[in-house]
Image: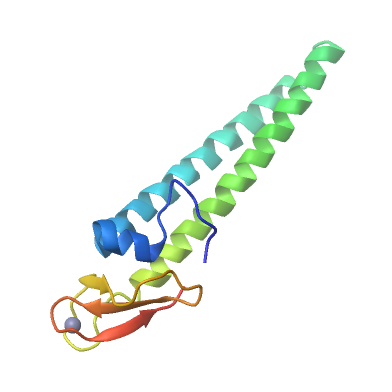
Length: 133
Ligand SMILES: [Zn+2]
């Protein structure tokens, strides 16, 4: 399970407060925002490489600093994008009720965030199963 993050609710918290479908939508939007940040960092990296030609020593040091910051933020954003997308897709694949085939109509069946998954209950038929991260 991901460490607590103020931008992304945990699965159990998300299902309780907004429902599975909204939680999933929010995770996808958040992951794609990170992809956009990674893309912008790539553009910044290319711009700093372009600026290495010429300039004073101070400007070259500033370019080096901007290059390192852009690379670090870009790698973090790419990693976060891939994690959020894979996590959301893994859980969405398990969100169909095996009995009535309802998609994403879930309630959390037991309280407390568990690290090995979330026990959920179908809103239509009451079938219970585990959503495993
Ligand atoms: Zn069901």
